[in-house]
Length: 169
Image (cartoon, rainbow, N blue to C red; front, side):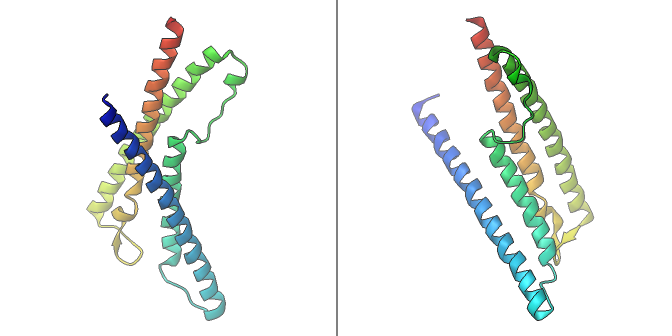
């Protein structure tokens, strides 16, 4: 890979990270404003935005999926890691490889099934909020799971290369 390609990939990585972080900040801010606004309107004016609660649920979905993408990017996702505390470091890498392969395959299946869900939503013309097609609101699902699958797969490949490179020396 040339230095120019490497620089481009690094810029894309920085832009992607900035976009993820900015999305999380905007979504959290929108959720807080909407939730507090709904509470204030219900307490003081005995009314509220009809679609407010449903929008909050969708914002939570989007925030959870973008946060999951960010967690898989920085390797900060949930991990139950008991084996590495009891075996030598050399052997603790193998379960990590298996977990990354398993996570990539599960995320791949979830991406495929959520894509099928989106197709069914389009076919049945489901709507959310006040007439918005539901496939737009749920489009984060296949995208997020596909991106997490890709990242776990890259972790698996990199871990495999390192595992076999270290053991053959």
